[in-house]
Length: 265
Image 1 (cartoon, rainbow, N blue to C red):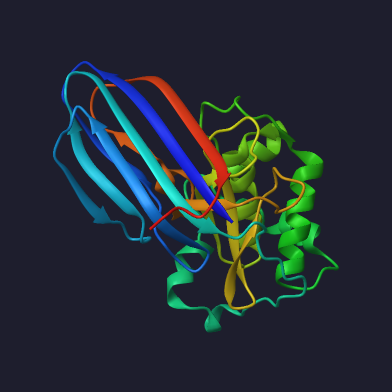
Image 2 (cartoon, rainbow, N blue to C red):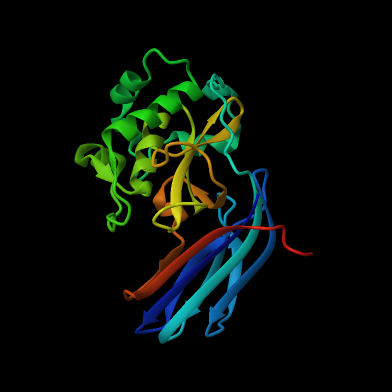
């Protein structure tokens, strides 16, 4: 399917403020970026670089006053994420080198605290994809999805204790449990067609059967086109904007995703 996805951010800054932005999806095996707009207002110099996870990042200094960013992309993507029950667990010595950072505990995915719990959840399931699927089912059964109520980023163990969370929190818990089973797992932030309420969305991917598969504890199935913007160990690595210095005021944020016909060349 073809999707048109857009994001508008409006800020107010009291002093010139350095930003790192992360709102440019890149083409890959699961998506193809056909057309893209990226508008800064007022226009300021920006330098793009690629971070250690391959994400496209933009570095700039926002001027004093109102500052806005508008992105628009046309993307060809699948209308249903791949599933593969029975895809096998890959022993750590045989994992690709670039998956290894996603085995370790990170700031919000404290997987070292989930060794016993993850083993209990996965008991009786075939190592690999089936264990990941059961972790997702466990999260759906035990954690209430509360979109719009997660201003503070918390760890997987805190999410597990409080019993509710936003998409970011539930992804953190899934990642932590997978890593506790020596399954590489990474955070993804992006767009999801049909998400309600519409916003940027977070889910996770796990590496089984020699490839990455999508898992989303907030959705009952994997139907709907997804556009991945950024990948990382946890929310720290995939923030769509990071500002440095004095706090800034986010005046508004608007996200739109809709299915469209193939754009003209």
